[in-house]
Length: 108
Image (cartoon, rainbow, N blue to C red; front, top):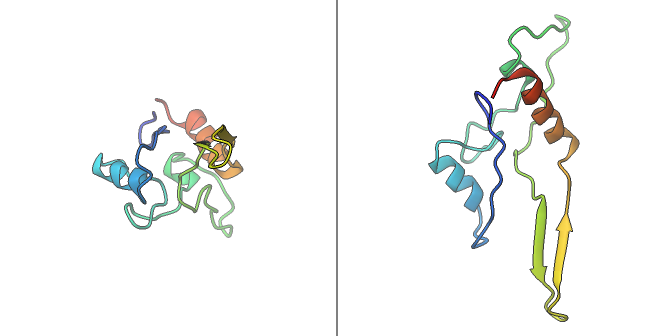
């Protein structure tokens, strides 16, 4: 958890559409870049790094411009074999960049 952002792990119980997004909003903690339940704005380094230096003519590029949601682990029972199937995935580069910048720039 950081001053203005948090990395949160959810466990989905019902699989209903928008479940994580709705619950996050209800906790006054909408997901980054969520156009439906949040402000929809991209995550910019200047949001957390006040003294960001860059060339005047160069526009700042967002670190994350898509919904800040990632399925790290997915498991289910295979319908034919009844065996547990597990898929895991590391954070994508853009999400890693945001988390790394939060760790470097913002004190918990």
